Image (cartoon, rainbow, N blue to C red; front, side):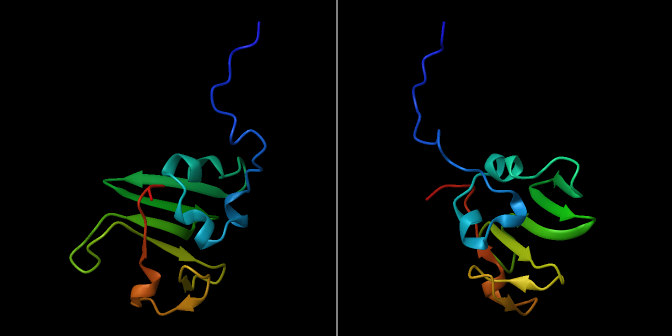
Length: 110
């Protein structure tokens, strides 16, 4: 007997690896969806503590998900390139304190 499938809208969806996703593609992903893109045994690691999430490749920060703070008053993401440069939503390098590098994030909500 085959189990009934109620929702097949994502049945043919190709899941990219985290290192293939752009900042825009990450924008509407939930934390669980982001975790599911981390390949096993590849140098990627996921750390979660007190509302902060750090995703690292070979020990280097690639993505940080942060709760609101006194400067950035909304949940946000920091995304870094292979040279540890902070990126904006378009994948362009911005300064470490540039507000464009504090990308709003709502855990996959709209």
